[in-house]
Amino acid sequence: MESMIDTLNGIIWSPALIYLCLAAGLFYSILTRFVQLRHFKEMIRLLFSGNQSPEGISSFQALTVSLSGRVGMGNIAGVAAAIGFGGPGAVFWMWVVAFLGAATAYTESTLAQIYKENDRGQYRGGPAYYFEKFFGGGFGKFYGILVAISFIISCGLFLPGVQSNGVVKAITGITGEGTMVNTAFGAVGTNTLVVTLVMVLILGLIIFGGIKRIARVAEFVVPLMALGYILMAVLIVLFNINQLPNIISLIVGDAFTAQAGLGAAIGWGVKRGVYSNEAGQGTGPHHAGAAEVDHPAQQGMVQAFSVYVDTLFVCSATAFMILMTGMYNIQGTLPEGQFLVQNVDAATIISGPAFTQMAVSSIFGSFGNTFVAVAVFFFSFTTIMAYYYIAEVNVAYLTRSIKTTGALFFIKLVLIFAVAYGAINNSGYIWNMGDVGVGLTAWLNIVGILVIFFMAKPAILALKDYEAQQKAGVTKFTFDPIKLGIKNATFWEERNKKEQS
Image (tube, rainbow, N blue to C red; front, side, top):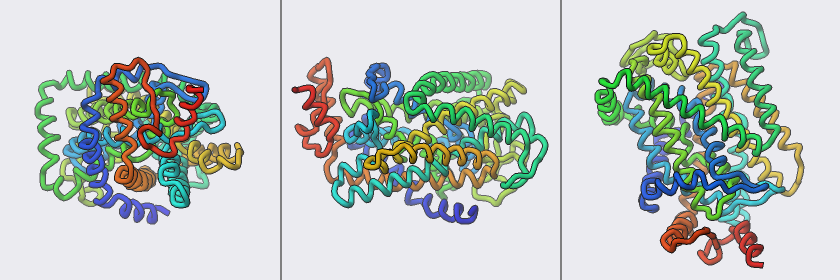
């Protein structure tokens, strides 16, 4: 199994996907005239617009649920792995993919709003929905089913284990493994089993409450945990402020060294950047489609802002903490156990939260270990909630005509199993499983939305329509897909008919 996952990972995350992610972001940045810069002020305003309904959640709730998926192990362990395998220059490429990816996030999330549905009293949207509605016919249905199955496998089975594995590694890094006991998965420490059990119980209580309960938890937890984590990073930067120019120079300079040219910095920066901010991966549109908004472009802008929060704020916080304190090794492309740079114990696991814990602990002592462990728990736990919701949306898509709740109950059990399985297994293997999940959905989604653009440009038409209404100074935005020549946006067509009658 581990060998098969490694092989798949190597195929899916070939240089082609890495440069496709960068190229797609640049492509949409140019076509939207850098919407992520021009409408920054509007993004902030829309965060607090407050629209909500029995069928949909507010823009702010959609942002926090989306951020709960974006802000996770990728921001702590993922950044550490990017530095450990790709060098400090990988951070630069994480910034690049975030800036460009914000335009991709606008596009995919606007599509989710345009083609969303009201399914049994809940707004649902995402790649499966917009591919089916846009392409129509047999191909649209086929591609929608293929995409839905991919997201169920990725978010229901492959990705949750990365988060739970990170939680266990962070906590047992403080408490120790405990007494080893034999299980069906080999010898496992009692402390690992206790942490796993607590995660599973709390997760079950939340995900059985549906999107409304997930949104309420995310709305409260995500802003607090992100602000607290960034504040800790700011304090560490202030303690080492004299190093700031050198660290920035190191990040930018290393991004264009021979090592970067060979693909290590670019590859790891883009891979971990996409894993963290999810722009182009197709996960964010699921939350965007659940929002109650007056115009699809509004939620597209809100989701573009979430990429900034994730990478430019939270990932940068981790990178500066690690680099300023020097608590990292760089393995690069060398065999395991050999390092280009070695500042800490060679036995330190690169693909885990250890670098970050060591960085905070070097300034704040034992409190640092505990702080990072708590941050990992909340970051990862809310990400698992977001993964469940994505899996649920795609199960609902596949079972629309059946009208059954049995499949939704089953996917809850599958996700809980994936959390438990990931918590007690080897971290490198679990990260590779996660990378396969991210890469699989990214391929399907990015290629699909590019084809949509070349055929009809609905997200660009929506942006131009929104900007025209802005210029006209309207007090309430409206969206008429028929007027814009956008077909099969049935939710908005029916909504307009009701308002006109």
